[in-house]
Image 1 (tube, rainbow, N blue to C red):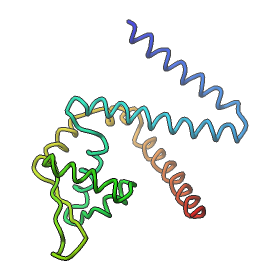
Image 2 (image 1 turned 30 degrees about the vertical axis):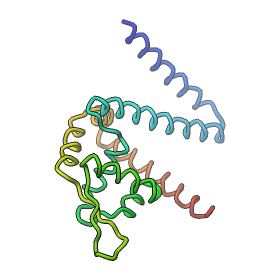
Image 3 (image 1 turned 180 degrees about the vertical axis):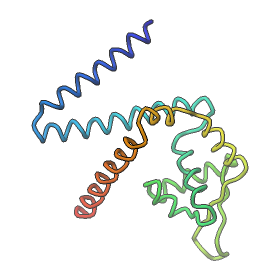
Amino acid sequence: MLKDVQLNNRINNVLIETNIMKKQNQLEHNFALWLLICKVSHDIILLRQRELNQYGIPERQLLVLRTIQRMGSNATLSMVAKLVERQDHVVSRQVMRMEKDGLVNRIKNKPKSNVLRLELTEKGLKMIKVADKSASISTIFSTLSKENRDQLESILNQILIEVEKQTFKQN
């Protein structure tokens, strides 16, 4: 009963915020949209992490594992860092811990090379499979039709491209 009341209160707050956003000027509306994107991202991350915690899987670790899996034999420390948008030294420390935990192997490409290739171990692959059983992301996005998901993806990519342009201009 209490959870139903809390859920209804949260839904009402979202509807109130939506009505407020519709009455704002362009600048206020842009700021409110930005806050909404932040809130959605934050809440999905928290939900996903709570779900993964029951399996003992940190979300950032899973992100690195999935990136290595997608890259296959081309996975290097610097490329993984770039794709997960973290600095090399941060990912390097994380990968070292993951190697100690038996999730990945770091392999030198050539004897005198500084380039480290990364590969998943059986334990790392099993962790990805366990994480795939969690349903929060699928449940959340299943509320959208394919057309809505495609529109959302297109809009978010437009925003991301503009963010990249603005970031490039500032550097």
